Length: 565
Image 1 (cartoon, rainbow, N blue to C red):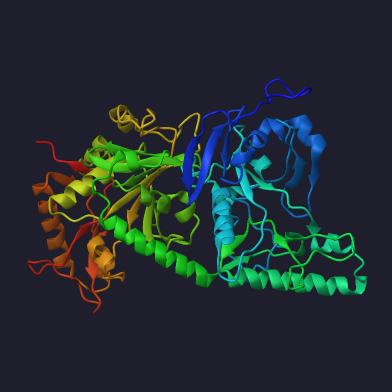
Image 2 (tube, rainbow, N blue to C red; image 1 turned 60 degrees about the horizontal axis):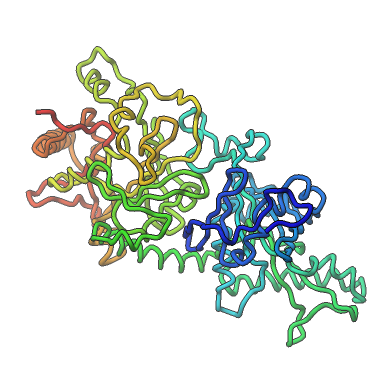
């Protein structure tokens, strides 16, 4: 369907097929747009799909002539769509500020020093959760309709995002979380009305009462959000929409209170209490699912945006990370585990460095799950002396890819040599035209035939890979039975320095572990004390194996290699 005067390619889209995707609990239909970008449409937006297609509101001439800049520090507009099929709509379109620093004038730094702008998918997920909240009754908001991701990439200075906060100092490590060169445009419905400050100017309410009413409504909105378990860290009167009536008053609820709706949710968050409740429930489900992650699953039961994959003998759930345009492989056969490892769940949470030389961090995800993530060094050359026999062997082998690390960890564990739990592999969405950091291309050549379900190579030299491991605090089976820290990890090097084992005992444990690995058909070409984890029990004593030795667990698999025989 087209209309007279429309560009020739402005057409209805409702008769076209769309892919489905569930992202952080929100169902979307994904449609490729005329510019090669993507439009993710919610259940609220699907009936308006024709109008939401970017050519019907974002085409440069139309957008420039039909937009109205709205109050606020973000880039947000009201815009009318073209008329398609006899229909038109009023939209609010807002450019996501994820990755930017929260301005000092937006919030009180002392109160919310760690607040970050939501990713577009987090924002929509939180808004939908807020709208569905039953405690204290519904909160009116404008409905989230769609997320538009234009194909065009910008220069860093155009995005407004902070290079020091997102970009890596090294070329290889410049992005493991967000493709900072893309725009994300959130599309909401337009709600009739104006902000409380603007609307009061249209009423007969005396001016000397305006400031008091604005303060009262701000306090009321904040309290009613908190009652439902939410907070907007930058709550402002501009976020509170009310409607002036013809009689000079404001539209009111049946009980006489002023009726209002909320807008602008880039800093919407759960209250600490509600976050704890949600995280506790999600963590409990996660622990149960990890216990059964390798149970048989029917491929037909997978949602359309996820696929089963098997790489080097390891079962994965594979899919795209929409917020970064990257990809994710989650160990096991349970598609319900996928969202726990979306980058926005773990990448921007507080982290502790576990290495002074490598990109290895421990974090507690937004779902209250302890994880260790390591930027893979696949493609780099080990920094060793080639004249030393040990160094020469490391150079001859090279760093493993994350897929090899995961396969070896599971094979070692199955052979009676415990290793930390492999959880997921994340591939960043940012591509490099010239992968200058690749010094050793052998892994990419060797694994060239290992493909994703969509046909692309799983290991690509122009991408960055992050291996995500479980933080060792007990076996999955134990955690599923009782959610508590059954042990505390301590690497062998620290165990010696803290007096848990002697230097002589440490040497014996290293040799025992080396022989045990060899019996399983593997060796660590760079075996060091900090590659081995011991476990401290509740009484702060070392956990022992059946033979009375301290339990040992391999925690670094970068240079683990099968023994050639």
